[in-house]
Image (tube, rainbow, N blue to C red; front, side):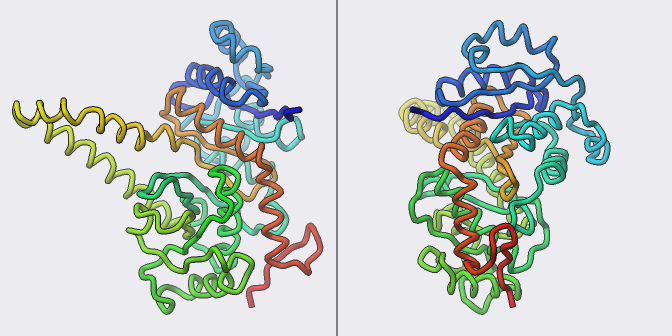
Length: 349
């Protein structure tokens, strides 16, 4: 029999909440029939929406939370707002009533509340933000994307373990390759923490998957399935890539509007351009994940629509279905097999 799993959903977070959230759950319910949802938010606003989306209503339990963490709310204020829909959703994960939580709300608040309430997995020093992106060879995983601006070797090795587990659970890869983002591919390049992390990975259980250092152009090329970096470098790389995609789209629109011949060329090229648009659609890659916590937490883009929110739910569902928690603990066991469970710490010299 298919195991039923429950996700806690912050119904009030995001630019188009709660409409896009409820509509997204209707789509997610079709894609993941084994998932059930606790929809957390203002019951007066959510009840009529569920009446219009029967598929979502069939798989949702409503939990009232009177307050909302606003997009511009300071983290300290969000932490004090204990009856917000975001806090209530994450509390459900901490209490075992849900296996994970999804929110399109305030990124800083999600990170702070999740870290405070759920704590990190034993053996993980810091959580990391991971996301999936496109490349010439297929989807890739990038982490950290901004949670940790400065990282030591231990952090980078733990990110590699978490990235490996994430790629297995969400992308379905059995032997994902990974690289450390650096200023060059040569072994002597980069700061000491990068070189030390590379040495540990070369001599550890991920040695067969570790491809060494990768550079910025390797991300789009898909040289490795996983790209590991500190949060500063990863965030810059992510935003640069997003900007490049928007520039490419703007230039294509300009080219095909130049003259009559260009417009005729667009009509001929339209089927291929539509496939390209679908391939690069940011909604396909919606759903950044805070890895390393005692529970699944997925951050949807605040401005996404129901398709994008459903994609974020799919990321959480895949992590739960494929037991991401077990995969990450197995990776930590292999990193330091002699340490007792609950107190695993990698030896970093």
